[in-house]
Amino acid sequence: MPAATIQLKPGEEHNEHTYQRHDLGTKGTSSDGRVFRYSKMGSTLGVAGNVYQGVVPIANHLNRAADVVRAVGAQAVSFTDGGTGGGVDDFTEGYVYVNDDAGEGHVYFVNRNYVASDANAVFGSGAVATFNIQNSVKVALTTSSELTAVMNRYHEVIIHPSPNTAALVGVATHAQTASTFGWLQTGGPCAVLTDGTVVIAQHVRASDGTDGSVEALDRDGTHENEQELGVCMAVNATAEYSLIDLALDRG
Image (tube, rainbow, N blue to C red; front, side, top):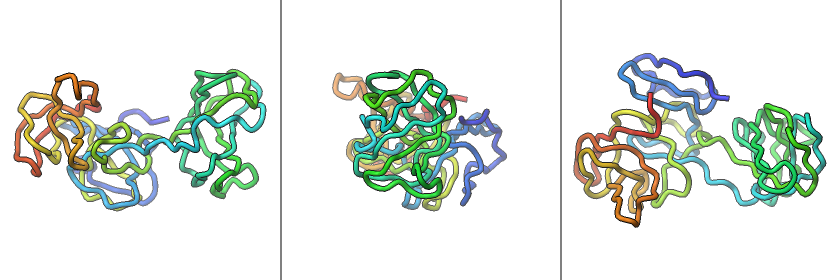
């Protein structure tokens, strides 16, 4: 699970790592109170000041029947992939939960996933996907139990499309190299790409017209349920960067 909050050194929020140095989702704070989360960039170059979202849950990893019975105390769960496959560590630090039947309502943190016959291989389309879980099974699973696997929200983050298709996770701090590890800003003053007119001291949300940007969050009955990103501190023109007090995290 994510480690305790780390105090970042000045400028450390702009560092990136080829190899993972912290748990995904580890919180970092700067001396001025801004908040960051450790994440893995997706397969394209990061864009400073753009808003990012997590990976969209994969349909073929939802509502999958457990392939074997798992007794209380088992330290792995598994299902047959629905036709998408996955990388060996795609779900590490993610979650598998029981969405229906025996054991429903229980959530398990994933230590490592692997093909049952080969711990170092990806699981292919239609293969059995096995997930080592941090805590053991609490309620026995049957082959009627339905499982859903989701990746860690900070794994291979992407610029949010407009409208966003998954929960927002932060704003890129710099042009982070694709597939590297680094810090997304989640709390405090941050320059963010702006779409349309935002209003000082009012809330903003992910734009539904320009990828990676924010627009005003109008409490007008149409968009009032959209995820709030923060509050505008200083207004700049559309297609420029306004200063937003991010509220995805608080120090």
